[in-house]
Length: 302
Image (cartoon, rainbow, N blue to C red):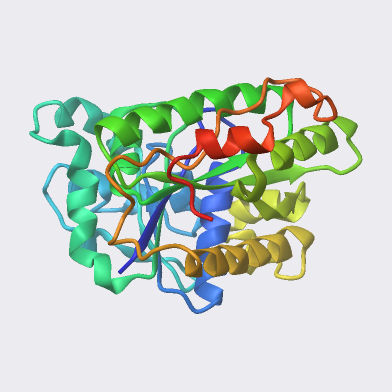
């Protein structure tokens, strides 16, 4: 049974698509059957996987409105071993059309159920806004992977995102939980990055992935060649970091209950409230005390 994860952050420009594409490529190279779902009308994950979005006859748009199934719309990423459910600008009109559908927030979940046994991982790349498309992604997923930069505004956006996930968990998808926070575009030379990174580790503990994705020019160049950075330059620091992240994610999944079991219906998303932006991690009043995290995480997996 597939593990379905949404790559999400309500703040734009934090590396969601870069993470989605490179994690899909890394998981495929590690022997995992992987499907990447592009749920952003810009279609950047589609283009970054080497698929021309302008020539597509079937996309996730047709899947959502019931004109196609996932198998018919899926493409193979050229030069990589993962599959892609692509998107293009047609998807922008889906939100208007979905309003008239019953259970419109679970259209993607219902469609993916037909291919559940064909993949080990399904990754969903969402747009930065909280739209009906993003809601479909959250409702289809078992967990959320949050890529974030170690900067002031990233902490502000994280607080909003955690609150959004809690609301979706309570009203739409009781299986939804936060799998982890991934630090991306990290520059160890910047003091602020080190401070925010330490603050996240202190407050969220093992909810912060151990792998850190460095700021790397080869990752930025790769989309112009229609390849994930993991394929474009496997020896680059960025590619090696995403390979390490893929291995860490696989290992983390071994310690979780099977996806189909799900958590208790009264469980809450696995994350405490984020620390205040700009809080000093060295000051005990600015971060959660050990007892606080347990009380804020009733559904946490240990």
